[in-house]
Image (cartoon, rainbow, N blue to C red; front, side):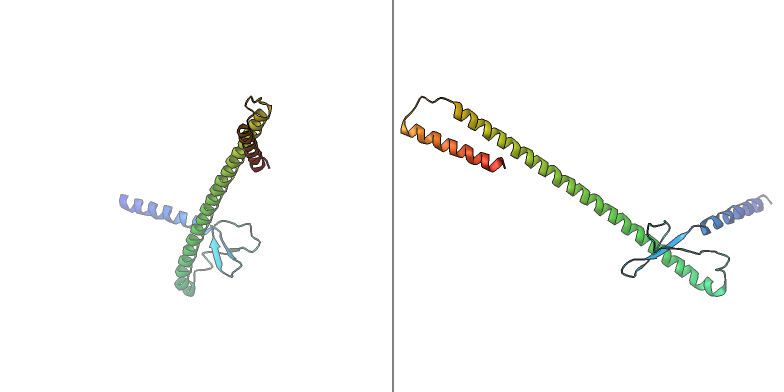
Length: 159
């Protein structure tokens, strides 16, 4: 008698949860390629429609044969859609990381360029204001060459 009560209680609890799952809404939509999709979450698309999953109206002999296959197909499609969504989200995260890395590299390159510009201008300023005691032709050529190199650096880095 006690075992019968446990079995009865289990059966009641089991069947009490069935209607809750039957009330879940399934959304159906087609993409631009005509592919039919099913999901359990509403989309922001105007194209989706809520499927009527009223269990009592679907309990006839013909639907009993087809319904498990259709439900399995819908469940499989839902799983495929979820996996595709996860993959798309992963790709978006990877693109964001790559973009952030490129932005960081560009900022670093710009900072290095700005520092090179500043250093070249400072070196030219020091060079121009320095007094030189060696006035030989060779010394003048070296100073002219050094000044030309500093100006080229300024042109290169100080755009």
